Image (cartoon, rainbow, N blue to C red; front, side):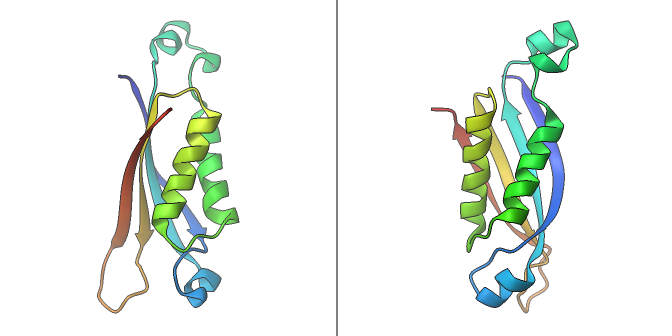
Length: 119
């Protein structure tokens, strides 16, 4: 299966279990892989035959910055669901990272990774 891969989509979002964490917000990064046939785009060299990467990035940033979730699992599920509904793809694979989480131990990030097929 062909794939479109977008890595390192960053935004400041208001997610977390403690209310204080949701108020202050934090930094997040999303990597997404869209499985879809790309043969038509490869032959035609036109945007109409593929997925507009910029619109996928805009959708992810909009969800991440305009909505608030307690769990990054819920953030990931919402992003996956919206992408599957809005784009002609077979499946979506994504990783959502909470960068520099507000805990005592020094950790680079927490992450969830999910794969969802179009039903």
